[in-house]
Image (cartoon, rainbow, N blue to C red; front, side, top):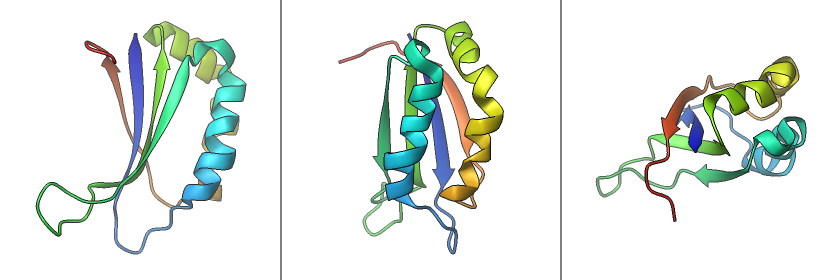
Length: 105
């Protein structure tokens, strides 16, 4: 299993609409990807590692798929629509990482 992490750096003055992200954007991603997306999670940054430090990322999601190919096949045909929705909830550019899930729940 792989995890695609899409992370939005916590940049002062940037806009990020957590409600839109949770209620509109990520359901859109899941709907377009269908079964290629096994499930997803959403994180809302609260704090950094040191006391009083801000969160490194204001928000992020993790999309779980069977393989990189499954992700690409599910996301690719809808990339323009999905990426085109980003300005509806943020003015940030995401940082993306694909990881192998070594240990799960």
